[in-house]
Image (cartoon, rainbow, N blue to C red):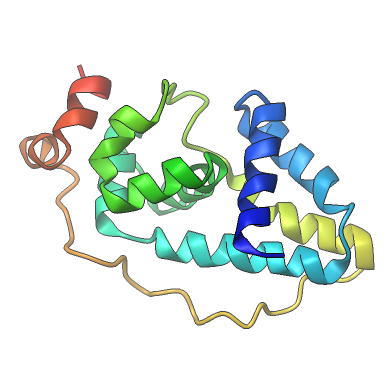
Length: 172
């Protein structure tokens, strides 16, 4: 499975789920069950590589602004959700996290920003196909610390200065 097919699967399941992360995860599992186990592992590698790429202080700050706070686990779930939004939103957020204010049509912190289930969809499909747990994917170990310069999430003035568009759009 190449990157284009990975993003096509992500986009088509998000559209079919009408943006609901839980429904998208269910549809993703269903879709992956149509592939052979090696292709499902390829999907898992693509997902995990992007999940690790998004482990950055600036994205964590954007998640903090959007969600009104984000613990370690909440940021993990946010990164899964961000991948689930598709290539344009994901790559745009990596390029400049503050651009999420323009890339997202809307954002409801009660529903959006939390898609933990998406992170497990390939594992679930692989187990259903093979009866075995997903093996090691052969990717480099995830970083211990987020990339970039640490942010003080408790400093509203600093966050509003670093993320002015997000702050104006989502923190009244």
